[in-house]
Amino acid sequence: MKKTIIVMPVANEETTMGRILDEILGLPYDNLHIYPVIDSYSKDRTEEIIRDRERVSDRVKCIFHEKSTGVISCYLEGFKRALADGAERIIEMDGGGSHLPSEIPQFLEKLEEGYDCVWGSRFMDGGSMREQPLYRRILSQGGTFLSNAVLGTALKDMTSGFEGFQRGILEQLHLDSFLSTGHMYQTEMRYYCRNLRTVEVPIHYVGTASSLKGSSVTEAIKILFMLKKHEPEVCKWKR
Image: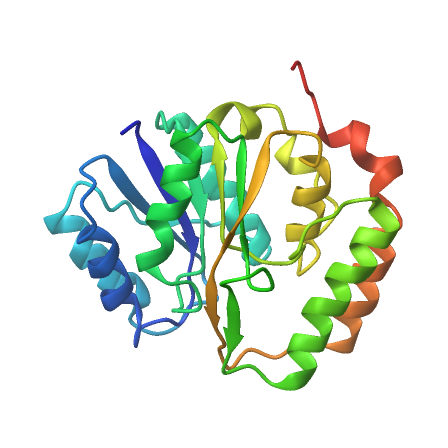
């Protein structure tokens, strides 16, 4: 398998961090690496747990993002570090237990088949979303419906953060030019990659205690209507 790096922003995940890392390390892939990206927002033992795993496994590398402006900046910093370290494929996933390590193999399989991007989907056949309040499900499904209508896309899930990329795709995106610094980032990425060879795979999303502010929804809708005009600032397709 080509070198694959999992980029995983984390903060205050001490109750799940060790288990998630061990489950990924237990998968039968010697060339699968984990880059947890952490910043000063994390106040518990999350970084200590990562550093402990880093000392015993050369497949774990703790990234402390000193100039972080939030979770999306941690994703993008992780992408840059993974590319710099020679990753041929990159998987993005949540480190708090919402995304299941047992579902990583299907992303690897589709990337091996030659797909440019692999999107995790909660709403296609075989996928699910549990332990989430009803309003979060409504927002996720409603956001997908609205995004598809406005952007002309046709995905089952436009807001999931479990996804995989070939190296060349991320190299052709100007990562610092993304508009979204919050929940809209996933939709923005899917829109820019809409004309590539992509595929959705079912995932089983497990909810967390995180909340969603009304201002975040308003900002997401605002950005949604800016993406078509902004696309040339981000995409550098040579394909």
